[in-house]
Length: 138
Image (tube, rainbow, N blue to C red; front, top):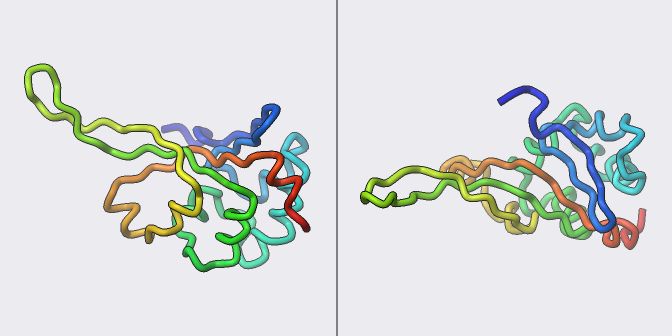
């Protein structure tokens, strides 16, 4: 995997998308990043976290009862991730494949970092609805 894989900022009509390898500092310095998420980062997400922390690392190690987890819940964050599963081939051989899923961030926070590692979860993208960001009071 290249260093810049999963390091992007995109948006469409309804959502903003962030690659999990992007750091909060990169988002704050990016002119194209959605302004309201930048305000949320400045005000809440980087208060107790180093701005050079990647989104993926922060989400992966976040405790369910942390103030940052509450912010992610309130803005309706979802996380695109891959979960390893076993698939049987036509000849009956088993092979490990990754199934892509989209989880609510709150569901991800319910698992500890050790449980996520044990299950082999790999994060790839943070998705946030624009309407939830607009409703969020700073």
